[in-house]
Length: 318
View 1 (tube, helix red, strand yellow):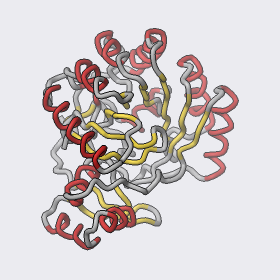
View 2 (tube, rainbow, N blue to C red):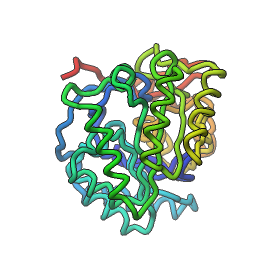
View 3 (cartoon, rainbow, N blue to C red):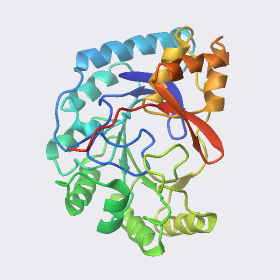
């Protein structure tokens, strides 16, 4: 599914998602990934979907959103893999901007040592860069990168992007995982590095949906508070993403079950969210059972909530 949503975003309002990477091609295999384990761990840029194909699908969804009076605040390239692995990324960003909406890209930053990738990203109106740790051991434990990646090169690439990017907003996101990157020294080092990036806003997050690995658990409240105070001591605009995103998913009329599946590919939904969405669309909430019976989705427990998530075929990492 190349297009999903619009979905409510804590950072961007109503976000129309563009999934420009097939399941689950990424340069990281993060323990907390809500999409699941990486099935194709790579740093090779390659073509996936043509810009014309993406534009056709996005334009159709924009028209459908307009027809159903669903506002769009951003078009967001936020796939279930690493978007900069798409060799068509630059031309796709430029094409999407012609639709009249700001374009955001969410990247793990792993390809930013490549000048061409940075040039392409600079076409976006907002760039979100993942910085979970600047300590080598913590980085490898949390992000589990491709063997060819070097943390020092990635960090330098992020700093260089900041110098080259002057036309839009740059934000950072740091996911805190209990026992892996939430100790005092690691958080302090991460905060100090992010000050050199000078983001418009630095976000701190925790896993709120099912994760790829069970050990990716939420730090306790004292640890989270300490992390927030540490970041705030170094950075002017720090925001915590410690709760769930808004659950008011806009309905676009018919094909409600298809819309749920499109969202689940990149965005697990609480059982209550799915039920509310289907009711709003005039569907029986129990119709989700059809996707379960077909083996397309599974229901999993995470904390106090049940989630529907995509069933991803797995194979050994390459």
